[in-house]
Image (cartoon, rainbow, N blue to C red):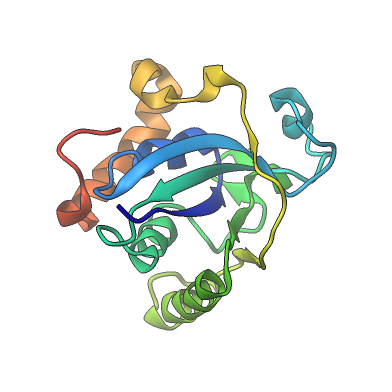
Length: 183
Protein backbone atom coordinates (compact mmCIF):
# COMPACT_ATOMS: atom_id res chain seq x y z
CA UNK A 1 0.00 0.00 0.00
CA UNK A 2 1.29 3.44 -0.93
CA UNK A 3 1.33 6.12 1.75
CA UNK A 4 1.47 9.89 1.48
CA UNK A 5 1.10 12.67 4.03
CA UNK A 6 -0.23 16.20 3.99
CA UNK A 7 -1.04 18.82 6.63
CA UNK A 8 -4.12 21.07 6.45
CA UNK A 9 -5.30 23.95 8.61
CA UNK A 10 -8.79 25.35 8.15
CA UNK A 11 -10.22 26.45 11.46
CA UNK A 12 -10.71 24.19 14.44
CA UNK A 13 -8.85 20.91 14.03
CA UNK A 14 -11.82 19.00 15.47
CA UNK A 15 -13.86 19.93 12.37
CA UNK A 16 -11.22 18.91 9.86
CA UNK A 17 -10.41 15.72 11.74
CA UNK A 18 -14.06 14.57 11.75
CA UNK A 19 -14.41 15.18 8.01
CA UNK A 20 -11.16 13.57 6.86
CA UNK A 21 -11.62 10.52 9.12
CA UNK A 22 -14.63 9.63 6.99
CA UNK A 23 -12.90 9.53 3.60
CA UNK A 24 -12.01 6.34 1.75
CA UNK A 25 -8.25 6.03 1.47
CA UNK A 26 -7.45 8.06 4.58
CA UNK A 27 -5.28 5.92 6.85
CA UNK A 28 -4.91 8.25 9.84
CA UNK A 29 -5.75 11.78 10.93
CA UNK A 30 -3.94 13.46 13.82
CA UNK A 31 -4.83 16.86 15.23
CA UNK A 32 -1.94 19.14 16.05
CA UNK A 33 -0.11 22.40 15.48
CA UNK A 34 2.31 23.73 12.87
CA UNK A 35 3.87 26.95 11.72
CA UNK A 36 5.00 28.77 14.84
CA UNK A 37 7.24 28.93 17.87
CA UNK A 38 7.93 27.49 20.44
CA UNK A 39 8.51 23.81 19.77
CA UNK A 40 5.96 21.45 21.33
CA UNK A 41 3.29 24.10 21.93
CA UNK A 42 0.34 23.51 24.20
CA UNK A 43 -3.28 24.12 23.27
CA UNK A 44 -3.39 27.07 25.65
CA UNK A 45 -0.32 28.63 24.01
CA UNK A 46 -1.74 28.21 20.52
CA UNK A 47 -5.15 29.56 21.59
CA UNK A 48 -3.46 32.71 22.85
CA UNK A 49 -2.80 33.60 19.21
CA UNK A 50 0.77 34.65 20.01
CA UNK A 51 2.75 31.59 18.88
CA UNK A 52 2.13 31.73 15.12
CA UNK A 53 0.95 28.10 15.07
CA UNK A 54 -2.15 27.00 13.20
CA UNK A 55 -4.47 24.28 14.41
CA UNK A 56 -3.93 21.59 11.78
CA UNK A 57 -4.48 17.96 10.93
CA UNK A 58 -1.84 15.58 9.63
CA UNK A 59 -3.48 13.26 7.11
CA UNK A 60 -1.84 10.00 6.08
CA UNK A 61 -3.55 8.60 2.99
CA UNK A 62 -3.24 6.02 0.25
CA UNK A 63 -2.88 8.01 -3.00
CA UNK A 64 -3.89 4.94 -4.99
CA UNK A 65 -7.33 5.11 -3.33
CA UNK A 66 -7.71 8.85 -2.74
CA UNK A 67 -5.58 11.34 -4.61
CA UNK A 68 -4.21 14.56 -3.21
CA UNK A 69 -6.42 16.47 -5.67
CA UNK A 70 -9.54 14.98 -4.09
CA UNK A 71 -8.25 15.77 -0.58
CA UNK A 72 -7.78 19.37 -1.71
CA UNK A 73 -11.25 19.48 -3.22
CA UNK A 74 -12.77 18.30 0.07
CA UNK A 75 -10.61 20.73 2.04
CA UNK A 76 -11.62 23.75 -0.07
CA UNK A 77 -15.32 22.92 -0.09
CA UNK A 78 -15.73 22.18 3.63
CA UNK A 79 -14.29 25.33 5.14
CA UNK A 80 -14.28 28.95 3.98
CA UNK A 81 -10.89 29.51 2.32
CA UNK A 82 -11.72 33.17 1.64
CA UNK A 83 -11.68 34.47 5.21
CA UNK A 84 -8.31 35.52 6.55
CA UNK A 85 -7.53 34.07 9.99
CA UNK A 86 -11.13 33.13 10.69
CA UNK A 87 -13.59 30.26 10.43
CA UNK A 88 -17.04 31.14 11.72
CA UNK A 89 -16.75 32.39 15.30
CA UNK A 90 -13.13 31.16 15.57
CA UNK A 91 -10.83 34.11 14.89
CA UNK A 92 -7.05 34.43 15.00
CA UNK A 93 -4.03 33.25 13.05
CA UNK A 94 -4.35 29.82 14.69
CA UNK A 95 -7.52 29.31 12.59
CA UNK A 96 -6.02 30.34 9.24
CA UNK A 97 -6.54 28.39 6.06
CA UNK A 98 -3.22 26.76 5.18
CA UNK A 99 -1.77 23.80 3.30
CA UNK A 100 1.65 22.69 4.50
CA UNK A 101 2.81 21.05 1.27
CA UNK A 102 5.06 18.04 1.74
CA UNK A 103 6.65 17.96 -1.72
CA UNK A 104 6.81 19.87 -5.00
CA UNK A 105 3.95 17.82 -6.45
CA UNK A 106 1.66 18.96 -3.64
CA UNK A 107 2.71 22.58 -4.25
CA UNK A 108 1.82 22.29 -7.94
CA UNK A 109 -1.48 20.54 -7.22
CA UNK A 110 -2.48 22.99 -4.48
CA UNK A 111 -1.62 26.01 -6.65
CA UNK A 112 -3.69 24.61 -9.51
CA UNK A 113 -6.67 23.80 -7.27
CA UNK A 114 -6.61 27.30 -5.73
CA UNK A 115 -6.79 28.76 -9.28
CA UNK A 116 -9.66 26.40 -10.13
CA UNK A 117 -11.60 27.31 -6.98
CA UNK A 118 -11.05 31.02 -7.65
CA UNK A 119 -12.27 30.74 -11.24
CA UNK A 120 -15.22 28.47 -10.37
CA UNK A 121 -17.28 31.22 -8.76
CA UNK A 122 -18.10 28.99 -5.78
CA UNK A 123 -16.96 31.79 -3.47
CA UNK A 124 -17.60 35.50 -3.98
CA UNK A 125 -14.13 36.40 -2.66
CA UNK A 126 -10.69 35.06 -3.60
CA UNK A 127 -9.05 32.18 -1.76
CA UNK A 128 -6.61 33.40 0.92
CA UNK A 129 -5.32 29.94 1.83
CA UNK A 130 -1.60 30.02 2.57
CA UNK A 131 0.45 27.44 0.65
CA UNK A 132 3.61 26.66 2.61
CA UNK A 133 6.42 25.20 0.55
CA UNK A 134 8.31 22.09 1.59
CA UNK A 135 9.92 21.14 3.81
CA UNK A 136 7.49 23.21 5.91
CA UNK A 137 7.42 23.46 9.67
CA UNK A 138 7.42 20.63 12.14
CA UNK A 139 4.04 19.10 12.93
CA UNK A 140 3.42 18.88 16.68
CA UNK A 141 0.65 16.48 17.75
CA UNK A 142 -2.01 18.06 19.94
CA UNK A 143 -2.74 16.75 23.40
CA UNK A 144 -4.43 13.35 23.20
CA UNK A 145 -7.73 14.66 24.60
CA UNK A 146 -8.17 16.47 21.24
CA UNK A 147 -7.74 13.31 19.17
CA UNK A 148 -10.84 11.66 17.74
CA UNK A 149 -12.82 14.47 19.36
CA UNK A 150 -16.04 14.30 17.36
CA UNK A 151 -16.26 10.51 17.56
CA UNK A 152 -16.01 10.63 21.35
CA UNK A 153 -17.81 13.95 22.01
CA UNK A 154 -20.42 14.17 19.25
CA UNK A 155 -23.08 14.99 21.83
CA UNK A 156 -21.36 18.30 22.72
CA UNK A 157 -23.16 21.43 21.44
CA UNK A 158 -20.08 22.54 19.44
CA UNK A 159 -20.03 19.21 17.62
CA UNK A 160 -23.73 19.35 16.88
CA UNK A 161 -23.80 22.99 15.76
CA UNK A 162 -20.47 23.25 13.91
CA UNK A 163 -19.23 19.79 12.91
CA UNK A 164 -22.53 18.05 12.08
CA UNK A 165 -23.29 20.51 9.22
CA UNK A 166 -19.82 19.89 7.76
CA UNK A 167 -20.43 16.15 7.83
CA UNK A 168 -23.80 16.60 6.13
CA UNK A 169 -22.10 18.74 3.47
CA UNK A 170 -19.45 16.03 3.00
CA UNK A 171 -22.15 13.41 2.44
CA UNK A 172 -23.99 15.67 0.00
CA UNK A 173 -20.98 16.80 -2.06
CA UNK A 174 -18.75 13.72 -1.90
CA UNK A 175 -20.97 10.65 -1.37
CA UNK A 176 -18.65 8.39 -3.37
CA UNK A 177 -15.63 9.35 -1.26
CA UNK A 178 -17.16 8.59 2.13
CA UNK A 179 -16.11 5.34 3.79
CA UNK A 180 -18.70 3.05 5.34
CA UNK A 181 -17.01 3.49 8.70
CA UNK A 182 -14.79 6.31 9.97
CA UNK A 183 -11.24 5.53 11.07
